[in-house]
Amino acid sequence: MTPHVEPDPQAGAAVKAADRAHVFHSWSAQGLIDPLAVAGAEGSYFWDYDGNRYLDFTSGLVYTNIGYQHPKVVAAIQEQAGKLATFAPAFAVDVRSEAARLIAERTPGDLDKIFFTNGGAEAVENAVRMARLHTGRHKVLSAFRSYHGATSTAINLTGDPRRWASDTGSAGVVRFWAPFLYRSPFYATTEAEESARALQHLEDTIAFEGPATIAAIILETVPGTAGIMTPPPGYLAGVREICDKYGIVFVLDEVMAGFGRTGKWFAAEHFDVVPDLMTFAKGVNSGYVPLGGVAINAEIAATFDKRPYPGGLTYSGHPLACAAAVATINVMADEKVVEHAAHLGENVLGPGLRELAERHPSVGEVRGMGVFWALDLVKNKETREPLVPYNAAGEANAPMAAFGAAAKKNGLWPFINMNRTHAVPACNASEAEVKEGLAALDAALSVADEHT
Ligand code: PMP
Image (cartoon, rainbow, N blue to C red):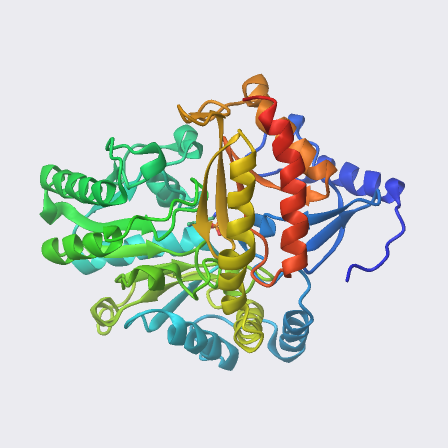
């Protein structure tokens, strides 16, 4: 368990001052932030310099799927650093080939070739490039409620408001509505209705855009950042059929949902679909060293058999990142981490969250699977009015801020996005840790209830 660390507020203050001096943070008004100085982390926990320990219900940015400082992964990185710390992507390197083999073995269908990147956005960029070159078409369809990364094409494809400020509105991106029964864009009242109407809407969008101009449809298998919205039965299979009908490349983005998060190696397995391209990152090596990639099917891989693939990255398949991936995947297999994540979802986290929803007026809906859950917080359960308005900032966001502060006071570090909190512990969190998290959420939700 967590080593005993003496509080050292002075050291914490120095770390924070050094951060504020030169570190420019993502997604932030630099003058308004007060980042927590982290003293250390292990397993499901991290701690600060003031003697506070937090149960991490965010898994970092939903990536520490086997927790912090797993000794086998740390050792593998150290060993690889001593052996061959880096080598350029054009060469065959044992640890790179082994990482690709272990990933290809687990991806569904014939997604057997792996193009490595340094993270999720680069994976999305390259998947889109592959789809465009493979089809000779330009447009890409993506869902409004989605997140695909912050590079140029990836942010364009993204539906979430973080796109707004940097959206160029170009690059052939067309957005459509994907299903989400709780806040149905199609005024549906059943899953079957939602699925059928969403598929009809997608097909109508294709008809009006011109099928022969569309290279790809990209969807998160289970959209994550935008709300962990498990697709209704039949939807993804329907999208697969539509893609086949019009010769469109089907890209599933499993950057967040992949590598055990949903209780399967990849979320696509829950829905019996095989995309043409699948992006991954995060959980592939629990984020110990930046790594992402695209799993490519045989047909698209063949496009680049005789013709060069015009894309690459200096650090593609970096040996340290690949060593971390090999160790992570082996740990997940040996320690049955994926099965454990499914067990937590079915028997501990899912039932625990549903029980909270029954007691707390602020919880409108609980949805998810494995260790991938969202609580949709509302002002009113009947009307489903969100606890804070869409994309609320400042005072308008006060109820969510109060909820977050209460969670932290109770030792839980929560993931908060708009009117939602996501419960996304490590896939190998213990039952006791998950129960501790549920108790802290219970206390924090009582604060949210005051705003209903
Ligand atoms: N796709 C999805 C589904 C994601 O959740 C994310 C990151 N949250 C990305 C792409 C982008 O990944 P990265 O931040 O590693 O570029």
